Image (cartoon, rainbow, N blue to C red; front, side):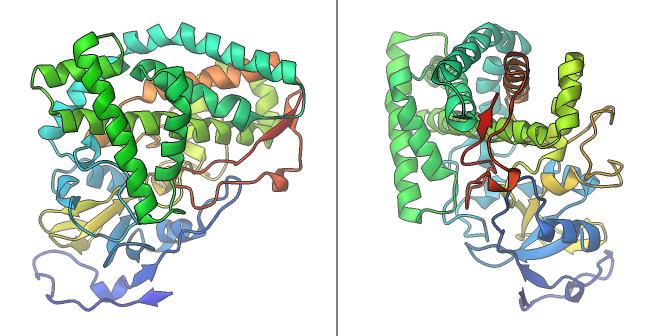
Length: 417
């Protein structure tokens, strides 16, 4: 489907511009995809129109879609493209609602973004992540023990990929075990396009109220978890309470949900690439490089994330993007750019250094990539070591995938061993 949006001003003659007529607005329905299939719309834009205009299912108007690796790096690291300017704008988007709270670090620009991020960074330093590793390994061992006791077949989503990341990020945040089902419910309500705006906004308000109370209590009883760190930042006026709550919500839901699905996608990739799985069993020292290649190869989300707004006219690949226009940068297509990655559609553990953008780029680079990598390595290594005959319990085309989810992943991953 193609629609045309009327234009009001011709581009200035002193800046290269391929012309708006060369970039009609294309409606992008964002299809439901199974397995690790790459979105054909994204593949076409990468190949034929790397700076294009799209309309998504919700919001208003059009947005520019940037797909090439170097262009994605430019847009995500250039101060002329603002996240803060997005607040209050009904830009075209994937969902009927914005996922983060308005005060979240995801909507901030430097220097505010730098200030907000500084309060969280100490929870994700190499030393802090190393301190989590032993506890994370015990959690994983306990989960596998429980799965073995229950017997085969088992659903890895229910037994491993769901509970493990939720337990790890909840330990870091300080969320008690009895409240973790609430976290799961709110996360599932927020990170999908399937619910109404009212439903999603209610979930956002409920989890916000939870962390407002939770951080408030940490201001009086302290602790060494991330909630206590945020409470101390509020106490010293480094953060407002609203900002601290927005950070806590973003880290809690993304830290559990993204790793749940990404790690499940990794296992599915290995289960459906038996030669790669066999090689990891034979060469466990290859695991860190394998995780990096899996992060590059797997299309870990549906559609695109949060837009940016151009604050002045900017030319990208000869195309004039005007001040006030929304821009999406696709990390998925950047990771499939053949100018950077030879034969990008092939899973290749011998690729060498893999400068993928799975964790983003620029000021909004993910705050916890070391933790996500650690969790993925622990899950893969533990499952391959303890379940030497691990395999799918159903044909690969019978694995069910989440519908209308923002982060892609299987509904269930049934296995035998």
